[in-house]
Amino acid sequence: MPKKIAMIGAGSVVFCKTLMSDIMATPALADSEFALMSPTESKLRRMEAFGQRMIKDNNLPGKVWATTDRREAIRDADFVVVMIQVGGFHAYGVDYEIPLKYGVDQCIGDTLGPGGIFRGQRHIPVLVDIAKDMEEVARPGAIMLQYANPMAANCLALGRVSNVPFIGLCHGVQTTLDLIAGYCKVPKDEISFICGGINHMDWFLKLEHRGRDLYPQLREVFERPEYYKNEKVRGEVFRHFGYFMTESTGHLSEYVPWFRKNKQALGLYCDEPAFGGESGAYYKWGKAMAEKYAEVDPLQFESTQIEQRSVEYCSYILEAVTTGVPFRLMGNVRNDSYITNLPNGCCVEVPTYVDDTGLHPTVIGALPPQCAAACMTNINVQLLCAEAALSGDPEHLVHAMALDPLTAAVCTLKEIREMTMEMLAELRPYLPQFEGKSIKPTPTISIPPDCQPVDVPLDPALAIGKRFGTLIEQKTA
Image 1 (cartoon, rainbow, N blue to C red):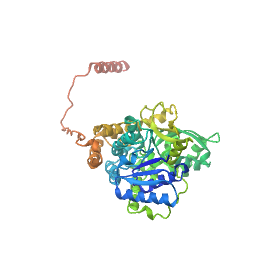
Image 2: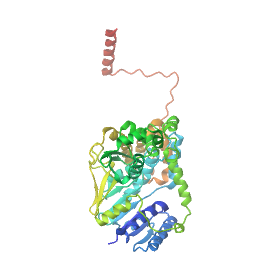
Image 3: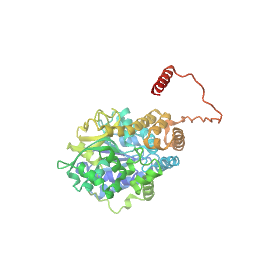
Image 4: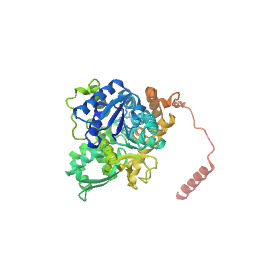
């Protein structure tokens, strides 16, 4: 039978077009039914008309229709593709601009940091509702293909509240393999690798070309200025942690405390333009693209001819489920002991096989301890981000922000609380879980110049320690 594919957040001209084109280019999926859903009627109708034109121009047997009713789009669906962006670029602007006032400089701002945490607050409740709709009206076994950021926090929350099969999809591994292949001058499709970790902090545990370990060559290449300059942050983490990671300088610089904490660090490590570390690079680029396509009618695109599929995993997963021919990918899934030194229940990114029996993540075992420890600094924030979104307790927002590596490197706890309050006030229209709830302000205590510390009795245990220290000093003298 033809597969029904619900596409939630289908107002995205570029990304929705890419995924639809990939699916239509897959012979086993040529007769698919696309149910496009977006709350924005004008964008939705343009994408509906464009999809119908693609079907017609390529002489395909499938069909495309659109609705603003999410539940109707999901009804009887075999697959639900999620690509939402709640709050659009107004919310994204708040994610970037308010933290910048407090000295928290973000390049991307959609995965961790203040931007990622608040994006999670906007997306997690919606994802939970989508999962509920799938439980009630989708076909049994329907799979959610989850593209919305912050990937790990979103999937962590989904894994807590729903048994709907889901997989979080990113293209960081594919694009990093392009970089490695170029640096080592070997064909990408001849590289054998094993990755494990979390989304945007996935480590290449094995990296070989025809049985030859590529790591010695990659380390040597990164000591050449022209290569190091291209990926300073990733190269520096590679030097000190011993394993290469899947995220570029712009992304990775936000997930650790060392590279964006002051002007000196930014000037040294994040001085390349755009995603090489530039402040607000993705927000500025995304806003420019949104403005460019705001009034663009997809029907005016020069060509609707379907060509080669993109690197996105979506169509390949659907193909594997439909045909039974296995496909391997890097998937974001709930950690059910796939990585043994990361907490069960968090979201991990591991090699995953998919076929007509579903999703099959593989066991990695234990990460190198330094890699696991780096991942844990992000997982702690993801846990609190999910807790805030699911519980509606705004104090957990403060806790998540306080434990964020970059924010903590820049701000005091008082500043973090004030920044969180300011962001919550601006973003409330998109955060119904916090309706009627507020963050407690920090009490202000003014200490008069003549104020003396209170003379309190010393704890007996401390008194013994102090006395013992005195005796040692006397004996030494």
